[in-house]
Length: 112
Image 1 (spheres, helix red, strand yellow):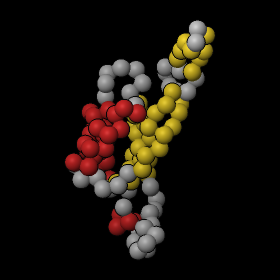
Image 2 (cartoon, rainbow, N blue to C red):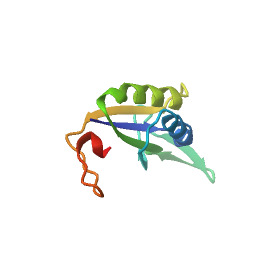
Image 3 (cartoon, helix red, strand yellow):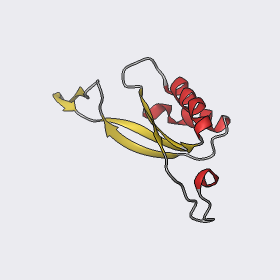
Image 4 (cartoon, helix red, strand yellow):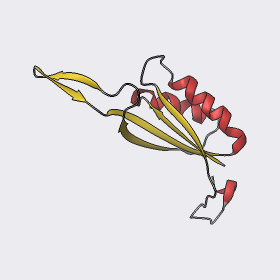
């Protein structure tokens, strides 16, 4: 099992969710996060004063999937979330040692 973590632009969330649902993904977790990468934030002008915004709002999507599903998930997220502009996001894949469905006590891949 693997954990796919995707950090994307907020306005792309629904489009990515629909694409993942269409390919049969049954569960995912979504969090509102803030951060910065190479863009290092930006400056804005509010009531005539310029100020620096160090953290940019993003959406983090987490999906636990079987190893053989991961390449398709990564490709689908990448294609759907891409705008071609700076700040499109990142995708990380990390191993998952175990999983447990609390309601039924199923473990491993049966729990996802």
